[in-house]
Structure formats: C-alpha cells, structure tokens
Image (tube, helix red, strand yellow):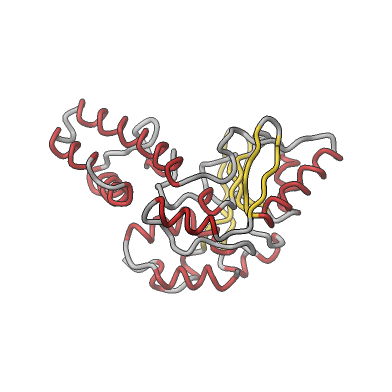
Length: 256
C-alpha cells in the first residue's frame, strides 16, 4: 500500500537497511502484501510470512512458478494480452517467481565464496579475515561484505568491479521472497514493458533487466507513492526502473 513505503522508510535504522531499502524498497508500494521488514532474519521468518499469503501457481513457458495470487492474476492477464499481440511472456528459469530463503542464500554464498577466494589470492584480505566472514550468518555477512566494498573497495560482484548487489540480492531482502517478483525471458521485447505496466508490473531493481515486481498501480500514480523513475542505458536501449525516491521520503531513510 502507499503508506507502507513511507512507514518503512521512517523505520530505517542502519546503513545496511538504508542501502537495501534504496535497492529493493519499491516492493513496499505494492497493492499486494509487502514484506514485514527490509530484510528477513532467517528462513523461519520467511516461511512464516509466505505461509500467511494467498498464493497461486501457474505455468509460464517451461516453468511453473508461485506468486501471491493477486500478482499471479495480473501476470496471467499480461501473458494473455501478449499472446493476443503475437508475443509471449515466459519464465526465465525455474526460480523466476517466488523463492525460499535458502534459494537466495545459495546465490549470495556463490558470490561471497568467489569474492573471498579472489581477494585472498591477490593478498587484499587475510586468510583469517576471509574465514571469519565465511563463519558469519547470512544477515551478518551482508553487513560485512557491504562494509568491505564501501571501505576497502573489495567488490564481490561477478567481475569483482562492482558491488555484489549488482549480481545477487542480499539474502532476506530479495523481492522474490515476497512472492511479488518475476524474471521474464522476453525482457528485451519493448512490448513486454508496455503490457506489464498495464497490469501493474514494473522493473524495480536497476541492473537486473529481466526482473519485474508487482506493484499493482497505474504508472501515472507511482511518483505520488514515493517512487522515482530511473533510466539506464544497456546496449542501444534505455530501460526504466522504479525505485524509492529517497530524497522525498522521511529523513530517517537517508540520514548519514
């Protein structure tokens, strides 16, 4: 709901939450059921939230996905409209829809492990420090990795030149955990953007082109909900992403 974005922004209490809210906070403007916090602590909290939702399943292409019922209905309607236009909307992979906490942990751990091996091999981080990071819980690792990137410029993205958040979502913060995100195979088709927006689906994570989030609002109302449209150029194409407009939200969301 519209007020949820403001309420969550007002509750931001750490630099990690501030960063994650800026990256993934658009989900709190959904007409579906938003997550209860910026980041889930563990699998138990994710499972409790997901079990409280009204969910549905449907097949898109080669994969069956699970989403909140309202999001799934809108996605199915978008797929029908695309088919009428001679196009298609299919899932990019088996995990294109809702995910479990452990799904997000596995993706995160892959990048953390590769990054620690890379930077230890270059002598930029000691074996002891790398070991201590591996022993942290996923939530603790998020803070530790983002700190390394911010202070030491040791990046954990796929090519070690950008933040890990350019490659994977922080475990517990992924919009897929809220069962409101979908990775579409036909993300380069401009018609998909137009049809998705007609049914309340928008790109909300810059740098993740296939990823759309169900907000359920008309595009003309998004700015009034505390979101801003950010443009990024990839190849010869300009893509639009709706992200929290930090400067217009409560001061606690962007204080130093």
